[in-house]
Image 1 (spheres, rainbow over the protein chains, first blue to last red):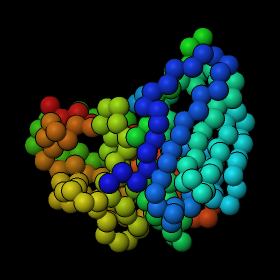
Image 2 (image 1 turned 120 degrees about the vertical axis):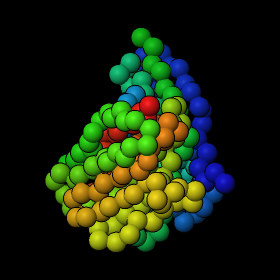
Image 3 (image 1 turned 60 degrees about the vertical axis):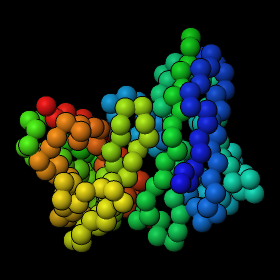
Image 4 (image 1 turned 30 degrees about the horizontal axis):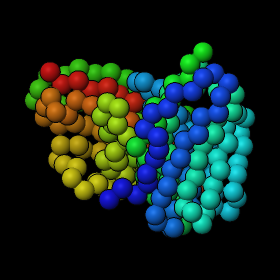
Length: 115
Length: 115
C-alpha cells in the first residue's frame, strides 16, 4: 500500500520557469513533510520541510505549499536553473517520536531544466 | 550543520564474500540510524532502523541474516552484507537523526557491485 503518491514522474522545464511537484498522502498521523534533492550517485539532501501547522514555507528559491484538508503538499522551485536538474523526493514522517520514526518516501520526480 | 559520512562510496566484491559499510555521524550523536536500499531510478526503500545498543528493527521482507546491522555507538552504525550475491548489487544509503536539533541527515551512499 503506497502511503504517499508523488507526481509527475518526470518534468522538463525551461530555465527560469517554476517546476511544481506534488505529493498526496492518506494517513493524517503524518506531521513532518520534507523534500529531498538527489543527484546521481549521491545520497538525498534535505531541501526544505514543513509541519502541518503552516500552509506555506519558503527557503531561498524553494517553497512548500501545504494543504492539510486535501492531504497534499507541493514543492515549487522559483527561477529554476540547469543546476536544479536532479531527482526530487517528497517524504513524510509521523508520530510523537520525531527523529526515531521512519521516513516514507514518494516515488520521485526526475526534473530536467533546459537552458 | 549535521554531517553523515558513509564509507566506502563504491565497492566491488566477489560472490559469496561479505562487505561492511560504515555510517558515521561526524558532528552530532545520532539517536537513530536508518539503512536504505535504492535501485536505479527508484525510490529509497527502508531496510532497517537501529538505535544505539539495541537490535535493529528490520522491515518486512528484509533478511536479517543477510543484512547485519550493528549500532555500536551513538556515532557509528555498520551494515554488513553477508555472503553477497549479484542480486545484492545496489545503492545503499544510511541516514542518522538527532532530536531535536537535527532531522534526518543522509550519507552519500555506497554503490555495491557483486561479481
